[in-house]
Amino acid sequence: MKLTVLKDFLNESIQHVYKAISSKTTIPILTGIKIDADTSGMTLTASDTDISIQSFIPMEKGELQVIDLKQSGSVVLPSKFFVEIIRKLPAQHIEIEVKEHFQTIIRSGSSEIQLMGLDPEEYPIMPGIEESKRIQIPSDVLKTMIKQTSFAVSTNEATPILTGILWTIADGKLKFIACDRHRLATRETPIDTEEGLTLSNVAIAGKTLNELSKILPDQNTLIDVVFADNQVLFKMSSILFYTRILEGTYPDTSKLIPQAFQTQLVVSTGQLVDAIDRAYLLSREDKSNIVKLVMREDQSIEISSSSSELGKVTEELNTVSLSGDLLRISFNSKYMLDALKVMDNEQISIGFTGAMQPIIIRPDGNASLLQLILPYRTTT
Image 1 (cartoon, rainbow, N blue to C red):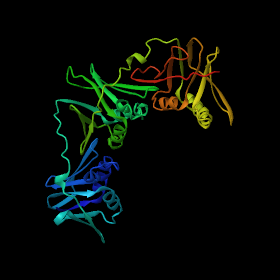
Image 2: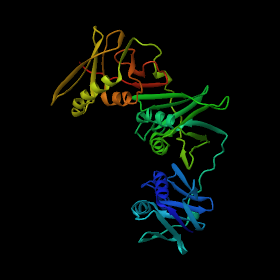
Image 3: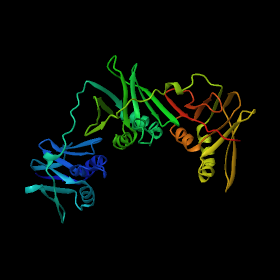
Image 4: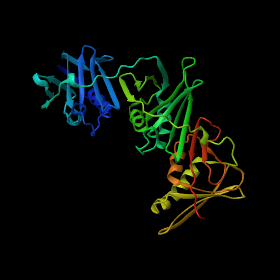
């Protein structure tokens, strides 16, 4: 293999695929990035068996020649060093030449680096996925759905299925569900699908979807999502992102969400976030994260927290509306802040069915997003 490629294109492609490299892999060749070059362009591949990412660099972009190919070929290069060296090379044009036994020479400006490459024939083949079950979703919508749910996945590997976000499709709507047994986040959006297309029990690791979110284009670009028996493929213009579906059956969380409320309040999202954030500072020092919310007859609420060493913080907020029984509720302030910070409305609606029942948080007037957190039992 011998070619010259523009540094910016190569560096961007490397940064995309490097997200699939794991330092924990026991398969030596998976510590490398595979490079394939032919007359169509360059394809870079990285994998940790759970995630595989391919990034394609075309020969030309508009009128700009990106790659000057002298000889087609393939090689696997050690990723850690390859990533660093390409980023630090002095010139815009980078020449890559692969000689016998996969010895690779990289030249740029006055620099010349020699790397010992590996045999690309030993690199795992990317999974083949039939495109029988496919949807399209705008990249900005997918990014937002990941952001509004991924924080609620479990970090406990003892229940692997709960470390994922559940994807379901029914009645032309895509729904995400994340739950760690203490809180739950759901987000729903209408999508264009083939009539009758349904999807159930497809859970994708939250950390994987967060990595995907980093390489999704910012502009409103349609992303193809292809579902197979145990794999999902996300297709972007120059990137293929493969991931494994988590094994197991996702629990039915629908029974956790009450259909009617004993108490409901509507309040400014920003004011509530700021008040709980200040209370969190004290509760965090006490390592409890517990913040209390007390409802008053004048339709105000009191937010407070205390620390045995530092003292107490109390703040009063006016609500937009407050109806039903007046309650005293204690909750994990970090969980509440996580839920509130992904709300995209100026006002939120919070529903209660009792002091020890799940707290339901929604953007006021918007049923597509729901956050649930469980309250704490306290002695006061």
